Length: 139
Image (cartoon, rainbow, N blue to C red; front, side, top):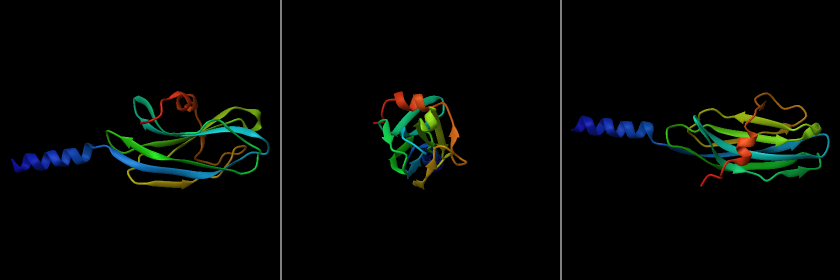
């Protein structure tokens, strides 16, 4: 009976979901006026996604514009996989950029300053912004 109890508690610890605070701050810049939207989501494998944070579409005059995306990522299966998306029209072209933080199980606090005309390594073009725009907010 003791062995079964130990195995059950080990199984529960291994497979319980994680709640992980995620905060991404920084600035967005572009040589001229631009529109942008920041979203933070949690990848769920085959499920679409869970929204952690989503801005309305905002406008900047081109100066370094501060942003803050914050929330709690959770996953029923294991570690969380937060992804930041930045939709923008810097240089008059619509783009969707993503920063994948990989699998994590501890608080994330990141500063990410982005020149939208020349995105830094680690921020890649992707096609999930429409999903991020239309997904229901996480409860």
